[in-house]
Image 1: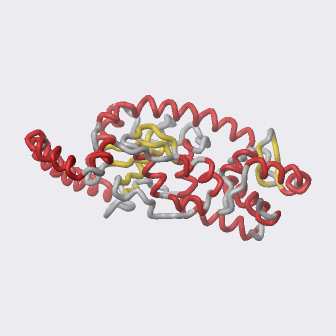
Image 2: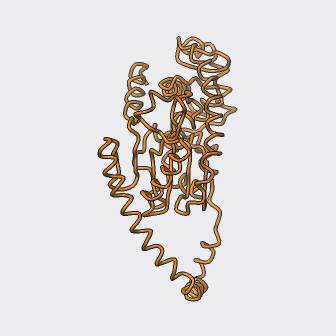
Length: 321
């Protein structure tokens, strides 16, 4: 079990980080999303809370079993309201995005941001985190945007003030070759931990979690309870690859079948380049081109990552942690 100072520091860090988003936490959530690198069981954690109840009540606010920074009792009902909104949005997203499964190059679609964290306001857009097959990001993005435009569910920054209806923002795309996140910090770790799956092909989500084991350096309890248990099961293809001779025989026999698909692949490669060129020009014109030279692709016009980390570090300095 961690020392008193370590656990108190973890408690401070976790609640202060959540406070940035006006989101109070239950004891179970404080334990699950505890910021630190020394895992502790829920039973031990609750025992520590009981022993230090008076101290915690003196330094923090607890309303309806929701803990927050001292003096912020008003955010408890805000959380309850946003939680209901977010749950409705998740169900809406799963229903609306289901047809995108037919696009063969999309390996994963997940909900990220405020909606995934159960902290979304009604007018907030629904952020999407997408993983595609290599060299198919721009084509996949184009098809997704066309679909969302046709059903009037696409995020439009210019019309947002006029239309309070929630919509989808395709703001982060990576490929199955670049699963390890470029930025490895508390903000991205929390995004990964709260990611909600909509479409998952070929165990892409499981591979994504495995490729980002660094999350345990920030959210050790989440990794121990959930992260490390998201495992990859062996596929038929992996089994065949273990037998080189059988794999070679199947490769030769399937050659006539594969030839038309090779030709089709060349055509699709040209489409990928064309959609990339067109989208880059449009993004530059709208000043939304953030990181697109190599994966990942990020298109969010207002990236909160730097601001959140700055606010978190400032709060830690004020509390001497």
